[in-house]
Image 1 (cartoon, one colour):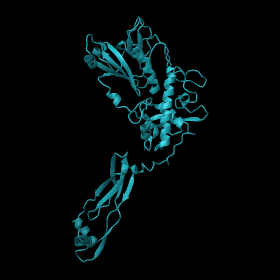
Image 2 (cartoon, helix red, strand yellow):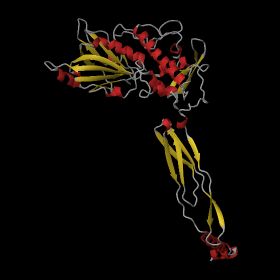
Image 3 (cartoon, helix red, strand yellow):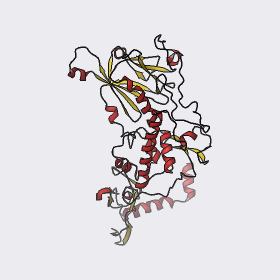
Image 4 (cartoon, helix red, strand yellow):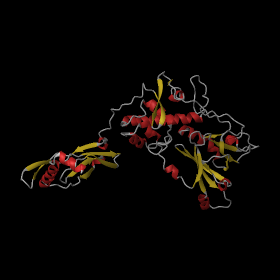
Length: 432
């Protein structure tokens, strides 16, 4: 799947469209490309190409003759592009090596190398343009700039059809994403979101709405490999979280620059040695590469460096968010019997309450064991949370009716009378 470095490269390929009128065409059949005939019949002026994480947006203005500035603002449309699993932007003459390089120094085949093709696009269903001969395979949309003698044309290709393309009236989808990993204005915010989290570090990095956006499978694996952290490691310290953020920023910056300059990624990166179809391999230093499932994705790790420390616990600041067990102390009460006046001791039930606090936001109280007794009791549970606040959770025990000692004795005597009948008489009555 194209990740932040690749999508940033796609944005760079589309930059020549800015400031020019463009024509958008839909080619072939793609159920995720939602472009109506009315939208395709209009001409648009490309104002900007935006990106956040893996999401691309073309800022377009509908070209209308003799329109005022206010009317022009109303005609603004936003074309969202998402690459999905195999989507990409292709332009003639630009090689997509994706920074890949094998151990012999040659560019890897099958990792995104673009080969100019004159075959029909759209999986063989496209109409060939006589004036523009370059048509990459699996093209389902194209963007043509009519400025200049030779038109500039970019193609949206998607072999597996998991990508998407649609119009919108605003940038609300951008607001739902976390800050871009290539443009972290406040690194301390990202560090605080990675520190003392119960969830594994890789799952946190892959969540596009939680810490940063744009991080995919290989970027996360490369970051954790360079930080010597296991993908399932939780409760990171501030030092570990700072190291992860610094490594992540360096990796996406170097990768984006390498793709822009058409150079390979550094030779000691795990990226060059992980594409073995889950077969064991060696990294640049000769260490074994193994594959595990973490965060719902296949993860390449070097077990010699990336060890999982299950004993690593949250810091003292986060211990208040851990599960607490509180037990009620036993108390003895004397109850006078109505019949003989004898005193008998009744032990109140011992109730175990398990309280779970998640991220200081929600509290879930669950009674694990409850033995009902004959009197009503109240249990007050105090739980300390972050910032010195306290919450009182009160558990009321159901009141059970108290049977008098005399009633119990009467019931017992009636049972004894029934059992005192000889067995022979009971058998004869049954036969009768």
